[in-house]
Image (cartoon, rainbow, N blue to C red; front, side, top):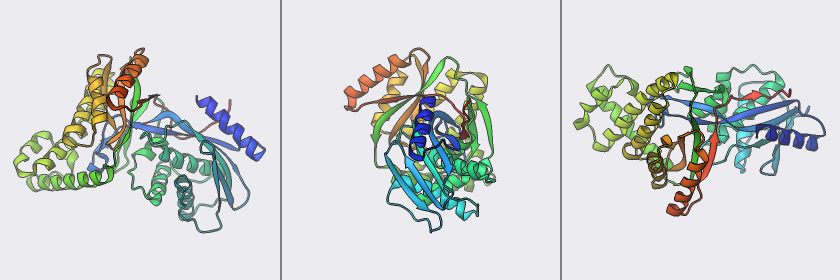
Length: 389
């Protein structure tokens, strides 16, 4: 699949510009194994780059004008870099423009490019195609013009590009897209950006995503409310335990002593956060020990917390996890991402994936009259240059 995408992108570039590209860049989407809704609660996340990618082909245009072609959309635009960069009414343009603006704002010396790109990352499925677009385009510019940008700064600049577009995302998506390694997950501290790799050998199990194909519109208001509730709960914790500076320093035992001092809903939100922070560390231990059954159990526990305590699930996602719980060959499942729709991530016994996909798709269709999309994913490398062998 990757080779076909590279061939398609390269051939399109040659047809469009009459020559072979100077650089080919591969930039991946990402999953998050565990650690949901705790990036803004001083916790850790456990993302990984995946084998779903955007392929870019680049050359210098040797002018101040850049021409960017989105093959899959059959759309293109031009930008004159001698003029001020402004937001476009076309959303995908803005991710590219945001990267160019970051390069300008940081004083880098570059000129125009010709670029085409194509993707096999399912759009709107929560696999961070926008981060892959930003990180890949930035790495192509860096490679073409020999710009001195560290991996960490590449992730941060890509994040700032998305902020400029108007999406106030955290750092996880861009960090995973840049720093990913094949068969490794990244335990990332979203505050300090300290990170460590852990093995991602899932042994006899495969990673499969089930896309609910629903998007409930509660996310923004609910997200802001959850943040307020967590801040309120942390203030109560700090008042009773002055030595605790953040949720990661608070044990479940300490929190339980404060149940009567907190609003009931605030307590359930905070209880989820404290337990999820602990689950990330347990998940790393499970991966290092090759204990997939424990990892799967942790995924089920996370979903239960997201659904009952943090209340960011929805009936369709809960149904998919219920099906997983009832099926012996699925050892772990949870909603992945912000919630209220999107995908579940599942650990399924190798050799049984197709049977499970067909069974779940049929039951899901019968229950909701909605098509269930499925994606097999493997842990892959971060944004990189492709060099033909």
